[in-house]
Length: 218
Ligand SMILES: Nc1ncnc2c1ncn2[C@@H]1O[C@H](COP(=O)(O)OP(=O)(O)OP(=O)(O)O)[C@@H](O)[C@H]1O
Image (cartoon, rainbow, N blue to C red; front, side):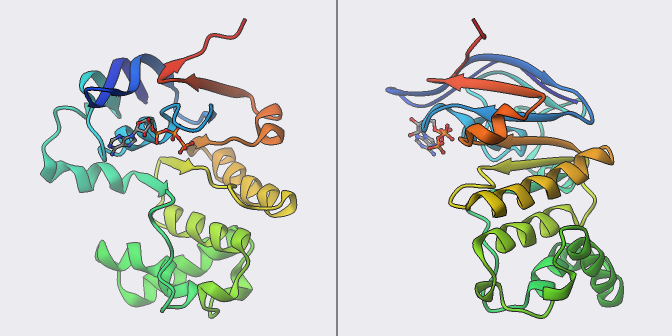
């Protein structure tokens, strides 16, 4: 469902973020993306959501070549993706519930339907009782779980999570991971970037990136 074919990304003459990447992520897989800072993990994830385009090669998502899709088709592509990126922080002047309702309201759901589904999404990440709280009243791990609820409320086929457990203590990180795994267990494809060795040790599949290349295990 996600395929990179000989993908390179050059940001400038001296920054080659990805070099000739070829990989496939099958529907329903849970894949971790590991590698040091600057290895290209965020760039790779952004390409799946058409936030960056490859300089060469092809990125195929659900049969569509990201390099060739029209910008008018990008919102439809993203509707099938749940994005958990550092840049997409929660709106701090609205309740947790309002944050999770937002993606539904912008895609035309009624307020009643949006509230019902947002509450169900919060229940799934274990935060049903915090719906009326302000985001800043929650711990970092709880805020990250709200981000997960917001990302999955539109029932995407794929979750892309960029360092979802960064800056969290072990207990909070585990809860975030459990929430992601629960969605994976009902068929959602998950691609998660992480530095976290404990998380990577427990993973079924880890893709290691280094200096823009996939490292082949020795
Ligand atoms: N928009 C951009 N313009 C120019 N260079 C960029 C841009 N985004 C990333 N880079 C560069 O591309 C390389 C890969 O960056 P990327 O953010 O993909 O790595 P990363 O593995 O996600 O790192 P981190 O773990 O620190 O987030 C780095 O050298 C980075 O400085």
